[in-house]
Amino acid sequence: MFEIINEDKKQVAISLHLEEIYTEICLKNHIRNQARLFSEETLSKSCVDFLTQLNFSDRKYCDYEYIVDFSHIKYIAPNSETRFFQWLHSLPNVKAINYEECNFIEKMKEYGIVVENEWGYREAFNDYGKKYIVDKCRAPEGETTQIGIRLDVYIDLKKIINDSIEMLRWCYIIAYDLDKCFSLVDEDTDKRNLFFCHTINGAYIAGILSQLLGYDLVYVDHLGPYNKLNKVDFYKGKSKTEEFIIVADLVCLGNEFLRAKNIVEYLGGTVKGCAGIMQMNISTLPSKYRVNAFAIEYTPESARKELNYSIRTELCNLQCEECSRKGKG
Image (cartoon, rainbow, N blue to C red; front, side, top):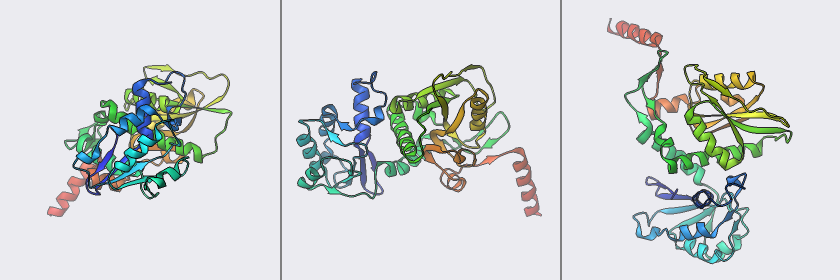
């Protein structure tokens, strides 16, 4: 379902953990009682049943290298191990990665599965995500904003948000990075993490992240890019100090992040960082925080080169015209 196919590298990447989470969501298993879907560590019988139905040998990718990522998977449901390893063994040119915490390494050796740790699903997503942005989200006609800024290329992330399957993949990548980030920074047990969102797109992303990671969310309706604030429905904590992660679809110049930060701090919260689908890294403000997790990131240089992305104001236009006249003279 969520395999990533890289035709240039002739590789197929499969995340067992993402497939398991999708299975749990589809079957509605333990969702009401399970605080963190992301903490699922067992490959269930239902997921194994689904995986074994995937017959890659009949597809045009039978000569590709198959990378099966075991990140966050430690166990396999009882009575499903044999079927799972038979399926794994049936994949052409199969390699297993991120398997260190599994309790069945010897079983993989028994089935002759090559194990290595050089390239995984997250790395495969970097190429996949950027290609997806270029092919499906990049509008070359551009846009002029209400405050007069000219974008020569418009990035429409609703192409991702409106596709529920694709949206889960991107939110899983964000959750993957957030989970890793939380494991690297010192966590204060007296503080509570919450997601803060201030746009409809951000609320949708935060809702999925909340289900994956088990954090509550706060929604302000609505602080958009033009400084419009309609209503504040802010969480009133009682037992612990709250630290908020601002969730947005796209962070570019950082103005929207700054306004959200000001609202959080004005109402008594503390900003821990930000997360979202895409970041341009034009503003240095988000990078100053402990948490900074985006599915895809561009530097200004890579945004210009790969997306032909540019931001201009009327001053830029006048300067370009003047330079052009001087060149003609």
